[in-house]
Image (cartoon, rainbow, N blue to C red; front, side, top):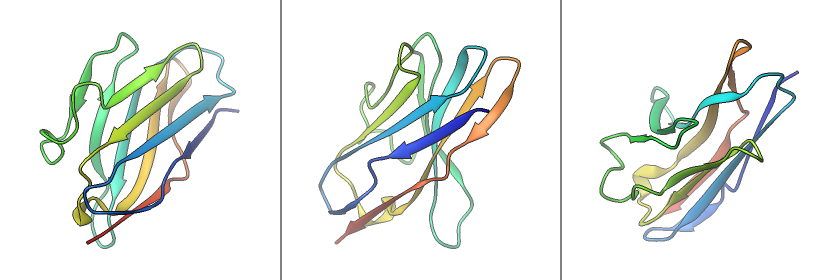
Length: 119
């Protein structure tokens, strides 16, 4: 059974930084695409960043300029994906979810980790 577990969420002040982690276990086949999404109260879940198994990244327009090219990264040996978030703003407050695409087996979500940014 595939498990996706996020960690690293916290309450921080505006301008601060956080590093989120997401570990995947229980899969039989390789993990292909890994990504971070977020959902603020009353809003739809939205993409933050994606990274392919080969390391190609993609960022949402809302975080470009604050999240550098290395902000999302992964360790294929550990089946873990990271999101380094800098210059956080109150509008970044949301539950952050990890999503992974496992070859053959399908697509899986974690339970989410809360990020709160105070002004």
